[in-house]
Image 1 (cartoon, rainbow, N blue to C red):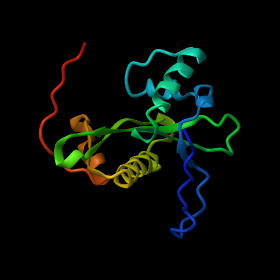
Image 2: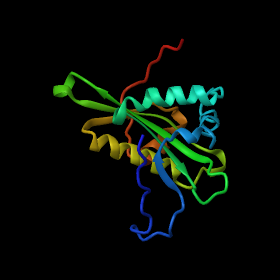
Image 3: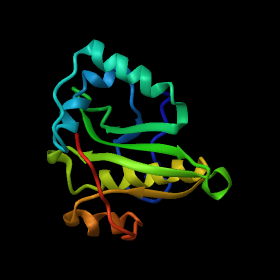
Image 4: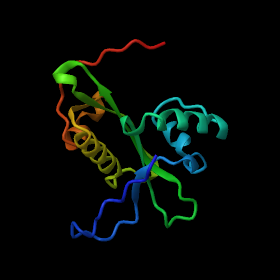
Length: 164
């Protein structure tokens, strides 16, 4: 999984931002990636071997499965501060179109309020657009509707689920 370049805050006339958004790397297991996911949902720790196996499985999907992370490379521990995932579903509908599914968006509790989640989501939407997706969808709790509206999403339909 190749790294993506960080957003250029300087180009937008903002103060230089040390946070880099890039693709997940195998070494992110040691930077607290799985622990960060546990702030979103039940996520037991994975051994380094289990993480490497799942990483390889997901990497085999190439650009159809993108996991982004945000980190401050100047921080001593280089902990992962935020993450989000894009899965590209290939369809028969719309002439063999594609739909982007945004999943597993979480910002570390200590880093919330600084716009990292918004940056991750916008980057995922950009990747989906560049991949030729005709739409990007996500599921969220009612409490997060306003947040995702700030990210450009509109409420559409009803989510249903079967859990095992």
